[in-house]
Amino acid sequence: MCGATILLVVDVVKGSGRRDKARETRRRILRAAHGEFLERGYHGATIASIARRAGVATQTVYFVFHTKAELISAVIDAAVLGEHDEVPQETSWWEWMLAADTAADALRAFVRGAGPLLARASAVSEVLRGASLTDPELRATLAEHDELQRAGYRQVIDAVVTKGPLRPGLDPDTATDVLLAVLGDAMYVYLTTVRGWQHDAVIDWLADALPRLLLADVEHTTSS
Image 1: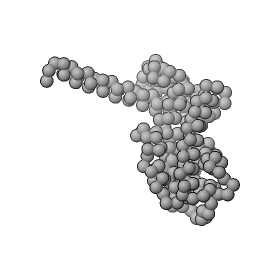
Image 2: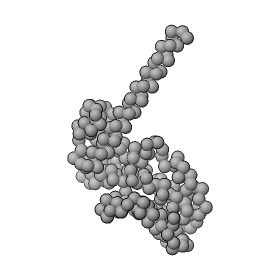
Image 3: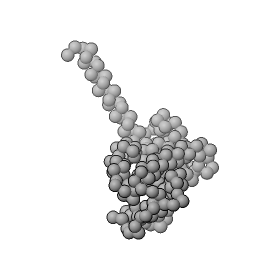
């Protein structure tokens, strides 16, 4: 191996190591910020406290995320994607939804697949929603997340209606609204945090209730 080749290999290895370190630093900041936002709220959490929790310099947090608004947006994105960095449309449970034989089965597959996502992201999403009431920058950030969620839920409704009709009086737009309201962050947080429901109980109820709310001719039996 010639000297130039050796230098190239060394540079590649060093570059890979730097990227791995940067990714790990980013993950630590996101985990720390998630915890701070849940414990202290958006306005109570500070970049300095997040940095201390992550074990990095305050300047590092600013270098990676620039502003606290960008940071909470990234925290929500990370919670949605999960540890495998998968968008919902690329997951196996989304494929199961698309492959379901009936509209009700497709909707139930979506509810159960989206359950872990709700558990990870709903509370911090509601932190953003509350803070956005008094902050124009956060309102814009929230609007972006809401639009992404609505687009994804509309894809679900469009897939479901290829397998069976909606209830009379519902069109895809209103069905999407219902799905967002019932299988949404606020409902999940209310049931689990305020009312003390266990996660599995919430998902079981949603998997049974949503087909009844949205679809025509669904039997009134509890789904498994």
